[in-house]
Length: 207
Image (cartoon, rainbow, N blue to C red; front, top):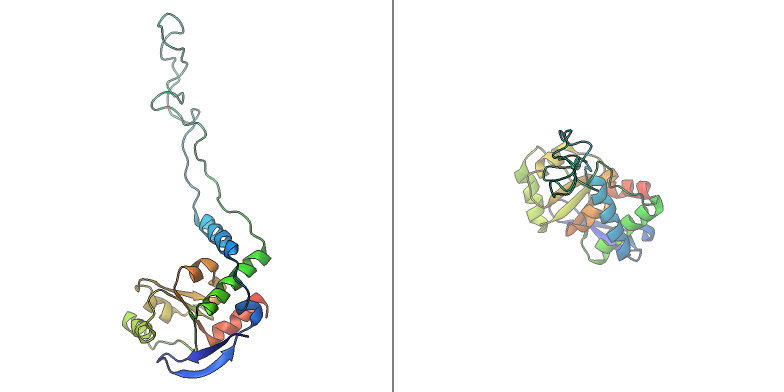
């Protein structure tokens, strides 16, 4: 089992703990990272892009010129796709870009991402993370103490004091355990988890 040190907010080591092999000790699978990033970004897409077909473009009811005798190709409407201002053929339509990924695959990808952070020694465990008031300065002091730049902090549940203190700091993301995902783990250099959040994570992934 991987063993990690537990720190307080002042970066003093207070204890150590063993991590579950089934979650933090698996062999990372790169192809799952690629799959999950595509999955998450596809679900974010609004899918509201659309263009008008020849049936939807306004006007074009009158035949632009007579059928014969002009030397031009016959035309029945100015809203034909070959005319300027006409409809679009095979253009984008309103749709969902999301696709399905099995639950077991999503769990395996998350365990792979967590294990990768352990292997890279970029997983930090805090005994707790609490701020006395909503101040960006207080949150910045914690980051400077540990030397973190791009960091994802995971809490057992939403903490408004911490969340609002962190929202104006570039490169910092604060998530509850329920919102922890592969994309945010991979795009941050460090992953910080509190002891309570770790226990909640075990419950979520099935210890």
